[in-house]
Image (cartoon, rainbow, N blue to C red; front, side, top):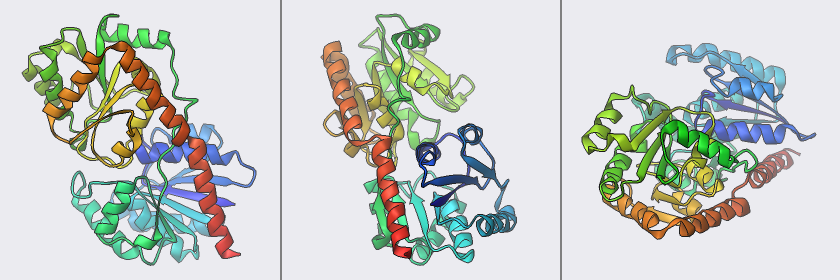
Length: 378
C-alpha cells in the first residue's frame, strides 16, 4: 500500500512531530510505503526523515501566489506515483492537497484536523481556508482524522461533515522519551539550579495561545513563599531576546528564579531536569507536550484545554485556562505534598501513557483505517 502525506511544512510542531513518528513507524512494514510532501520547505524534520529512509519532497511554496505552481507540481507527483491513499495534515494541506488529489483521480483522501479553539491564534488567510474546508469536507475526504475529541466537536459546530470524522489521539514513542540522572544534573547545573531547588517547568514555543503570561503570573504568586522554587521555560523564542517575556519576568520581582533555554532538541533531557510540569495554554488540540511530560514520569498541572483533561485522567490536576491564581494553587498543592507524593503521581501518569497512548496503539489504528479504505475499493 502506497500512502503520500501532504503537510504545509516540517518544522517542529504537534502535527509535524506526529507525522514524523507515524511515517517512521509505518515505513518499516513490508506492506506499507509512506512518503512525505512538504508544501513549503524541508524544515528541521525533513532531513531527519530522509536519513531514516522516508522519501521527503519539498515544493517551495512561499506565499499564496505560489499556490498554482505548487498545485501543478503536486498533481505531477500524484500522477507519477499513483498513491493508494493521500493523507493531508492541517487546513492548508487539506485544501490544496485534497483538491489536487481529487483532480488526480485519487479517491482515498484522509484529512487531518488538529486545532480546538478555532477562534484564536489564526490569521485571516487561515480563517478563509478553513471556511473553504467546511464546504469541501462533504465532497473531498473519505475520512477526517481529528487528534482530539474536542477538535472533532469544534469543527462539527462550524459545519464540517460529522459522518466523515473519527478521532485518533496522538501516540508517544516511549523508547525515545528517556533520560538519565546524569542528563538531569547536566541540564540543571547549566541552568544554575542546585540539588535542593524544586523546578517547575514549561515546554512549548512562544505563542499567544500558549499563554506564557499565565505561567509567569502563577510563578510570581508562589515565588515569595518558596525560596527554593525555580521556573524553567523551554521553547522557540523563549530566550533573553524576547523582550515581552523578559519584561513580564522583571515585573514579578523574581527574575533570578526564571531560566529560559530557548528552543531545544533534547526534550527528554529538559523534562528530566524538571520536578513538576505545567501546561498553561489558552487553547490546545491534543497536547503532545503534556503526554511527553507524563511519559517522563512527571507530576503535571494543566489548564482545561483540548483533550488535556482526557489525556491526564486522574493522574494530575486540571484548572480553568487563563486563571493564574488557580494555576498557582494547583502547583502549590504539588509543592507542599512532598517528593514522595510527586514521584508516585508521576509514575501513575507514566503508566497511563504506556497503557493507552503509545505509538504502537496509534500505528494499529491508522493501519486499520488504511485497510478499511482499501477494502472499500476492492
